[in-house]
Image (cartoon, rainbow, N blue to C red; front, side, top):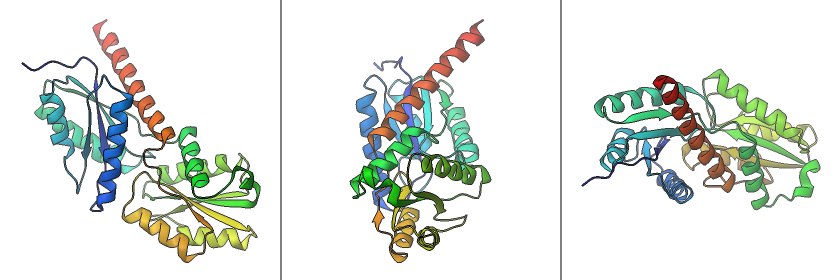
Length: 257
């Protein structure tokens, strides 16, 4: 007999990639989320390239007894996928599963926790906390045609600079300028002695590889790793899930009145 799950399930929605490192990273995130949320069923679903797709992941959760699902986009800015692709896929899947209530959570970023995760990766790559005033940072994002996403990256760079780094410049792997290499060279031209590149991406893949290539070709001194399941990112993921659960309960209570 199937048991109905009272705690809302968590569906981590990732873009997907042909690069197997992407799915491996998402799997690690899902496993860690399951440890942090032991009462909630946790699945990962992909928009493209990887399995299971979002629809299949929701079917699994419904089959395991879930009645409510928080779908959390594994995205760092609110761009096209969060505004269009994911809502569309969730609507179609939910229509085929009428007993399942699906609520989309906000994207992960921006958040001071993500900035802390970026610094964690820089320190792991060899930058010391005392090096801030002599180190310029390239904040390298995947890039988007959505102007809101680009503006968010620029805002993060400005705020991060105020914490003591010599300079922080945004850069993009696609869709927007400057590219990573150009941002590194611009910092050099300004006289910055040491340049570190901090990828503002969660999982490896084609665009993170482009960031790394630009960093190497321009002679960056330090290249940090992608964020992956950094503790700060996982804390933020759990926070977004709990916020969505609370919002759902408030909406249900309001509807009941």
